[in-house]
Length: 145
Image (cartoon, rainbow, N blue to C red; front, side):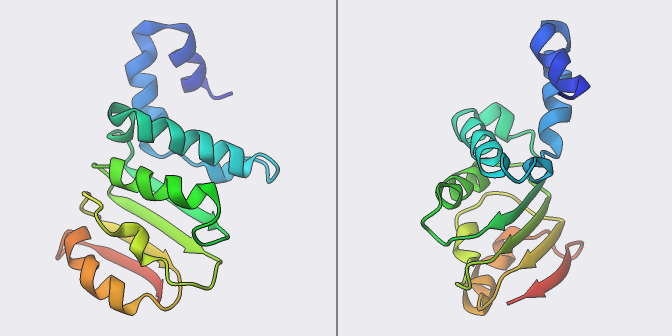
């Protein structure tokens, strides 16, 4: 358990500062492989029901979407991304073999950095990318459409 999580649980005086630090760059992917889905689902469930916590997310890694549309992670990720109004950095990678850019449709954030790893997303990305990035300062890396 991280120091910030312990502080958030044990002291109301530290709660807001600890939450700000915990949710700034959450990384459920650092969990053990057996806990990965449950940890990530728990994180996304929390932010989709708590807009204040969702607004604290600045950087988000979604590198483990394995099945398109079937995994509860996909549905929650769609809702979670729409809740992350202050998101600036997104790392996304899907292994399903299907276009995945539709997950970004309707998201309110303005990205400064996008790392996109998905195939066959040209049409959707061409349409929604201008709405999601802060031109001219956006950095797009390793884009695989």
